Structure formats: C-alpha cells, structure tokens
Image (cartoon, rainbow, N blue to C red; front, side, top):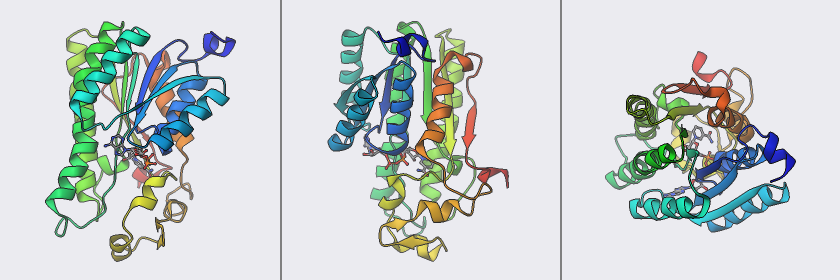
Length: 270
Ligand SMILES: NC(=O)c1ccc[n+]([C@@H]2O[C@H](COP(=O)([O-])OP(=O)(O)OC[C@H]3O[C@@H](n4cnc5c(N)ncnc54)[C@H](O)[C@@H]3O)[C@@H](O)[C@H]2O)c1
C-alpha cells in the first residue's frame, strides 16, 4: 500500500462506480482512487472504461473494470459476487450511470420513457438491492446515488428525466431509513448536480432544446452556454461533483444519511 493510500480520506476502501467510463462517474472514480480507495469501475462503454483505468493507474491508484449494463440484474449479482471473492467486500457504491432524454412528455414514446426509467431508476434499485447487503456484510459503508437538480424541481422538456431523478431522491431517503432501522451501518445519500460539462449534453437530440429556448449546436446542447445562465455564471466540472462524492464516501460524513447534497452553482437557490 502506498503512502497516499494510508493517508487518503477513503484509504483501503473498496469502491464501485457505475457509468465510470465518462463524465461524473470517471471524475468520481479518479477522485476516490486519489484518496486511497481501490476502484471497481463499470460501464457499457469499454473504451471509456479503459481510459478511466489508465488515468487512475497513471496517477498511482488501483482500479479494475467490468462491462456492466446497470439494467441487467443478473450482471449486478455476478459483479458483486466477484467483488466479494476478489476484494473481500465493498464499502462505497456510487450509482452514477444515467441518461437524459429531452422531449416534451406529449411527444415522448413509451420506449424512450421506459429506457430512461430502466437505466436511471431500475439501475439504482438493483444497486441498492444487491449492494447494501454486501456493504453491511463488509462492516458498513456509503451509497451515493446521483440524482440531479431535475430531481428537485420541474424542467420543461425534461419531465420524464425529472421523474427518474425525483425517484432517485426519495428512493435514497427511504432506503437510508431501511438501512438505519436494520442496523446495517450503511448510509445512503443523493447528490444533485446542476449543469456539469460532460458528454451527456452532446447526446441530447438537438431538435427539442431549440423549441425550449436552450442554446444548441451541431453536437447538441453546449453545457458552457447553458451554465452561463446559472448564478455562478459557468458550468461545473466533474471534479466539482466528485468532491461531494468523496465527502459522502468518507467518514467525514459519518452522521449523514438520507439527505441530498446539491452542487449546482446556485441554480436551485432561485
Ligand atoms: N452532466 C450534467 O449536467 C448532469 C446534471 C445532473 C445529473 N447528472 C447525472 O450524472 C450522471 C452521470 O452523467 P454524466 O453527465 O457524467 O454523463 P456521461 O454521458 O458523460 O456519462 C454517463 C455514463 O453512463 C454510461 N451508461 C449509460 N447507460 C448505461 C447503462 N445502461 N449501464 C451502464 N452504464 C451506462 C455511459 O456509457 C456513460 O459512460 C447521470 O446519472 C446524470 O443523469 C448529470
């Protein structure tokens, strides 16, 4: 174990981050590894995962990756079983994988509604269902579910996304209470990012945002343009969210469960 691992804020902990091949998940994985955690990074994007693992290794951290579709319950069970036998347990779970489908609710297809629900909500459900017992069996730990400011307030064109992120917020609170009641020593919290400059904005179909008055380019929405309208005047970076995730993963937040950490440049203060 390196000196940094011994002195890190999550030194020696085993951490699993979903959707870690890009954006906030990658930022969280890199930050947790820098604070001494051993990372298990998962995603459906193999190339993205390879880059995340390389960046952690280059910085002297420890990480392995698994191909993992969070909507696949059997895959969740297989990965967690492997984590238990290979690493002896799990202490930190970051349910981060998510998509954003921008569409008026009146034109949205049921297929798009269901796909977004499956990734953003079912994926978190499977993580909680199978992850919390493993965390408890490992002596306790912390689950961090990535919601959004869209889980705190409505947003036109994002009604279905808001439904998924609102679900993550209250799912987190209710499971936090179940874990506390059962004496599992597992804390569960949600993180609510505002406009963060990641690839997710480039994946938004450009047709709808224009109708909603949002600035778009050939690659979809420009997060920096959107972020300029927030009270702090710019979009956040994955590191800004990762800092909150490290806090919730560490013992600094040992008395914090069932709450929401908003990191949004003041967006929800209006
Ligand atoms: N970027 C923002 O402004 C913002 C704001 C609020 C909340 N969020 C939330 O933060 C989380 C991360 O978003 P991001 O901005 O880093 O986006 P991103 O697109 O950069 O990264 C999301 C990752 O999730 C992965 N993923 C998608 N479907 C998956 C599946 N079925 N199984 C496993 N992995 C899957 C993608 O391959 C990708 O690597 C999401 O839950 C998103 O809703 C983002």
